Amino acid sequence: MPNRDDPVIIIDQGIQDRLNQLGRRLSNLEPLMAEIGEIGVLSIQENFQQEGRPRKWAPLAESTKEQRRRQGRARGRILNRLGAAGLFGSINYRADRNSVAIGTNRIYGPTMHYGARKGEFGTITANIRAHVRRVGGKNVRVRAHTRRMPVPWGDIPSRPFLMFQDEDWQDIGEAIDEYLIIQEDQ
Image 1 (spheres, rainbow, N blue to C red):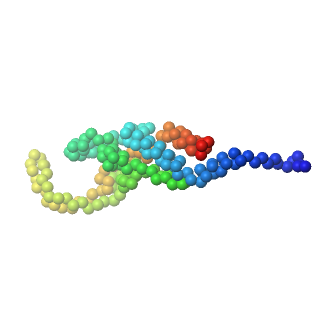
Image 2 (image 1 turned 60 degrees about the vertical axis):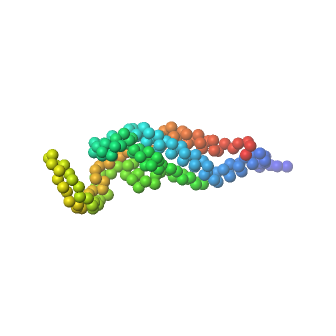
Image 3 (image 1 turned 135 degrees about the horizontal axis):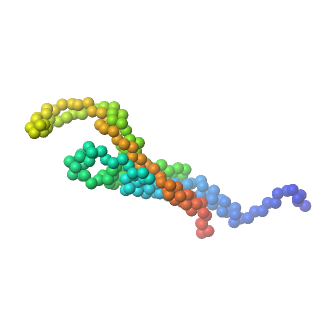
């Protein structure tokens, strides 16, 4: 006869099966990580569409606006002028069994996100081609030469684009909850 203080052991095969299923799901979170990656990419792309969230990014400098006018591209959005070919289109994710990384492969991405001061990355020697410059209403011929230039050539304000918004955390929480629910037909 069992002692009153002995634990009662009940083996329920249905519960045991469900716990085993949960263990298998938790051993490979790649589907969940991919879902979180999708949520993140869509949110970051929305940051580009709105030109900054929750706060708007710093406006373009007048020199940038003038450069765009000369190039015939005056209407582009901040950090999104090249669309899918530029920073906006480079946002991607990589998911594995335990993690997800969201970011860009564009070398200038961190500079656009964090900003930079003029000359922060040193200087370069630029080769200037011979050209004609208009000075005081007269055309002046300029010979080919080299020039030391700071990198970047001007201050770049911080425009944080790699950020989740409050509603994204709710969406991620819901994705986790859905992933942990074991479907009866599995």
